[in-house]
Image 1 (cartoon, rainbow, N blue to C red):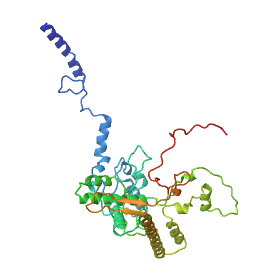
Image 2: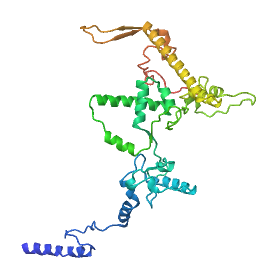
Image 3: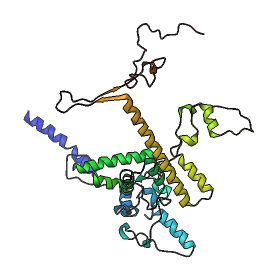
Image 4: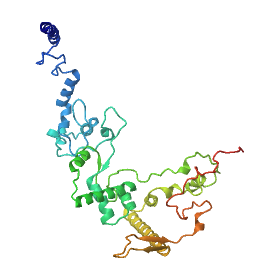
Length: 372
């Protein structure tokens, strides 16, 4: 019995040397048929050739700019926009070497390289539709927080002066407050991750002049879509009639404001009209500051009137020191006839907490009983 098992075991071993001899490169493991990893495929060989050739520029990324594949030539490994710039200089007779802009190991030379083009901001070679969008730099975020929290400027003014949308300005201020709170409580911040991500993205830098040298970041005066403008309406009107934007808004809804009043920055319309009139920048800036002051004063007056009205109708009972209650009670005078005919008006009591739905009320017939 023992001899039979041994012979069968030896017969099974005689199959493996044939498989081993069939492999091109012998392996040190005699009991395997896996192909050797030393055999390089054509794709792997091309990859290493590219890494040692044109792809070697990515070993030392170019500072202060993105380093996407679309920005470099796949054969020479040189920056496309710089090559185009040098060709333009050579046509005018002012030729300069490539090394004057980018030196060894992608170090910046004495001359500045051209700014990134639209085609240079495509990080995925197989997805030509995706373009990397700009983000705010650290310095610009600090400037936004300083203007709002330290200098006391309103968000609308900061948005118009820095070409940044108002919602983004408010988000930056809130996030900067969270960051400073974390720094006060010694919470760790992901600084290396932040630097690594910002180095791979195009950034909007902070300008020194608030008039015109700031970089354009995004559109700040887009008209928000209103639900009343969803239907398509053909409205006949006389050719001799002056049909304005206010008239167009009234066609959709009587309460719809014109586009000039619904945009985020309606004050820019007056600034543009003054620019078309030929007024100098100093005069336009002076008028804009006066308008901003009037707007701030108007908001402060409205807030003061609202607080005075609240004090007349609201009674506050604060907890006493050492008392049994630690809650602050607020009593507000209300009128029951302000709830409206259906009891759902905003001035009615309980509006903040909602109104229970009537779809499951007993005895309420929801199915139509007749067709008219």
